[in-house]
Structure formats: C-alpha cells, structure tokens
Length: 407
Image (cartoon, rainbow, N blue to C red; front, side, top):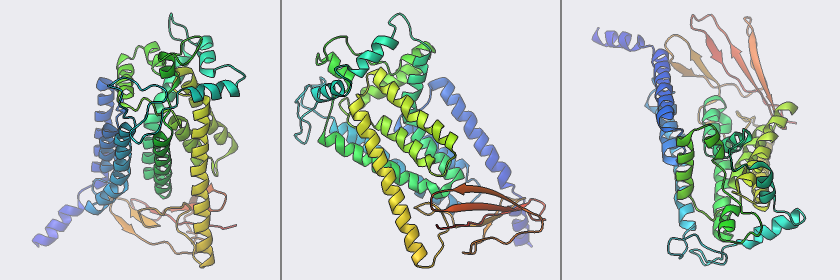
C-alpha cells in the first residue's frame, strides 16, 4: 500500500509545469543580469548561462537526460575555453609589455606581419586603403551617427551568435547541433593555427605604430554604444578587447563565423532567406573595415576558411549518405552527425513523461484517421518530414517520423 501511495505521489508531479517555471525563472534572472551588468560576452560567463538554461529545459526528465546535456555542451564549451587561453599564449612576444612591432617573433619564432596587409589592400584597391576611405567618409569626430549602431551590433554579435545558434539547434533541430559543433571547432582550430603561423597586426595598431601613412586609423568598434549612451556595453567590449591577442588579425574569424552561419543555413532555404543570410557577412565585412579591426585581405582569407569548412561538412555528409544507401540503410537523421536522442519519440501529455518509440526505417509513416500535420525541410540530398500524430489521449500525443528520399 505504501509503495502504491508513493507511486501515486510521483505520478501527480506535473513536471511540465515545473519545467516551465524553471525556464521562466531562468529568463527573469538572465534579463535582470543583462539590465544590471550588461550582456555576458566572456566565454566562462556564456558557458555558465547556457548550461544553466539547457539544464532548466530538462527539469523532470531524469538524471540521464541531464547527463546528455552535459555530454553535449561541456566538451564543446571546454574546447572553446581552451582556444581562448591558447590564443593568449599565441600572442606572447618578448616586448616588455608593449605591443609588438613589425618583424617581432612570437613564441615559436615566426615574425609578425604589419606592412604586408597594408600593401595587399592598397594593391587590391588601386592605392587606396579601404579602412582610411571608410573612416574619412563615415566617421565624425564631433559625434557618432546612427549607422555606427549597426556596426557595433554587428561586431559584438560575433561573441553571441555562435553559441546562440548552438542553443537554438540543440532545442529545435538536434540532428544539426553536432554538425554545427564540429564546424565551429574545425574553423576555430584552423584560425588558431594561422595565428601561430602568420601573426598579423590590425589596421588600428599599425596606424598607432606609424606604419600607415596619411590619415590615422582609429578603433571604432564600440562607437555605436556611445551613440546609444550604453557606457556599460562599451566598457565591457573594451575590457574584452584588452584581454585578447592584439595581433590576431589573420584570418578574420569575425568574418569567417558570419559566413559559416550564413552558409550553414543556406542549404535547403528559400531564396529570400538566402538573401537575408548573405546580408550578415556583408554587414560584418563593412563593420570590421570601418572600425579599423581588419583589412580586406584577412577578411577574404576568413571567408575562404569558412567555405572550406562548409565544403568538408557537405562532402563528409554526402559520403555518409552514400555508404548508408549502398548498405541498404535509411539514416534516421538528415545531418552528418546523428542526434543524441533516439529517432521517433512519443511524448504523452498530462505528466510530461516520455516513452521513446523507435520509428520504422521505411519511407513513410502510416496515416492516422484523425489527420497528420507535416513540416518539410528540403535539402540537396535528403527530404526530412516530421509527422505529428494527434491521438485521443487527453493530453495529446505526438509521433515524429523521418522520411528520407535520396536522389
């Protein structure tokens, strides 16, 4: 009898309600923190906020579900933290605390390049340095203009978009989450290796050291925050920049990651969505040049690196699909790296308890007399369709099946 009462007590817990309370409480605390202290831009702060948020999303699903969250996020965030610390290691020069000059050797004995990008940009633009030209036409010492807000937002988005895309994919498109993680890590490692092998000064630093003739080049990445009178945002950005590697201009990972974001979501998207996605890297490119953070040449290299990562992802994915097709198997997910959750979960409403049911590996899911709602995601190789089956259960039931059609 006591065991039965304990079972009834356990079943009476509405975990869906408690999960919603946890998520709402998390959002309230996060918004309060942002209002008081600003948006967390440091890697450790972002990691803690992300893990806290996704942990709230699995309240009531058991320790196994929470363990999967840690397995998904801790290695990813840990590697990015290691990248941040190693980037500072790369920027070590024997210059007694001052910024290194052209020809100074880094910790592995390779020289710093300061004049090369200046000559490269002037060669590409007929003797004109794009950073000087943009600042001469758009910068007004007497006060910032409205478009500087767009430049500062674009520049600062680099610190937020990559983890936020990961969170969104983890919540709504779990199959693509791991593909995104591997793409991010691949691009990060390539960028870090280039920082070692080809250290390069940004325009604003080269101008301070007298390597750029003509009008001086300023550093205006936080100018838009001054226009909005958001001093805390400008201070947070300045603190972060002071802790970064000053001579990590080649490649521009700011530009590279915007191209990665745009390219990652372009596959299978409608034409107007692709047009909107392309606007992001274009805005970032103009913002970086205006702010004096990068030359055009290192933006082009960043674009090339991002495209290479995307091409590798698509080729590996296609090879995986071809192997599965030749073996007579139908993959359960359309992305390269399979999801952490099993395919086809049935979640019954009421108590929020889930009972996983593996979808049949066929081309279709049987229709239900009560009707099926579907959402199609078309890609170059695979058509994934999610069928939501509403049953007669008072809380409703949802069945997800995966249809994949190989060309």
